[in-house]
Image 1 (cartoon, rainbow, N blue to C red):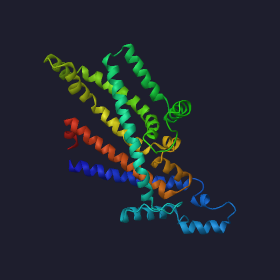
Image 2: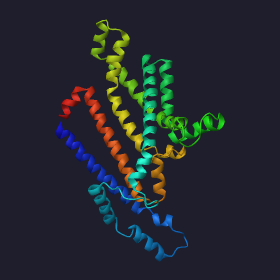
Image 3: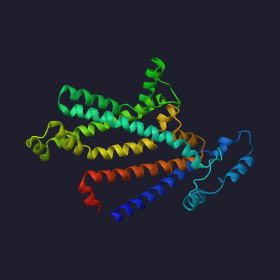
Length: 309
């Protein structure tokens, strides 16, 4: 088991190195830099070069990447924002709680709606109820979350006036961004869990449970639903990691002050340290969640523990 953990840790560090280098490279080949954002168009070429030297942008990509790695590895320093000159770690820590709250709320809605739809649909497979629920899941899966976000704003904010459009001042601000992020994930979860439940229902140990006279609800909760959730846990973990790092569009639409919005603004500003720092944090969160999912999977299925060792 220790060898397995060390192998996962080494592969995770390698992934972070690759991600950080490619993020540096992608921003380097993009046209313009932070100087173009900070300085006026009327500034001379000499003034721009002087500012580039002061900000360290005149060095090559490899030199700047080596400086970043040295600061991150030796001192745990992700650098300073080129726009505000504040430490990148402070900017990330200010925005991280908002993204975590949004991801948790969206994941909770995903599990609630997806499980409910799967249980309802699998209770009468092939019936009109099954067709209606799965058609709704397909609709939720087909609709991009940014389009769903705009529809929700038009209905609940502009037409009905029940909820605020943008910001993060109260729990009501959280509802629409969480629904926008949760609907596609809930649709995927519903389809996967329905299939999993139908497969488990025909298993020998389920028939044995019924033959022993166990109550129908007991068999469903302890045999069918528990074993049906094993493949779903992987999906939920991946979706949570995706929500932590991929809510850029929804956070921007609702002006939710999370990491996604910070990163989008930093990309427009060519603020390389902020983009790299936020990207690494999101990648680390995604890798961590994947690792925890594997641990949970092993806890539910002893065969996984055996294979890991």
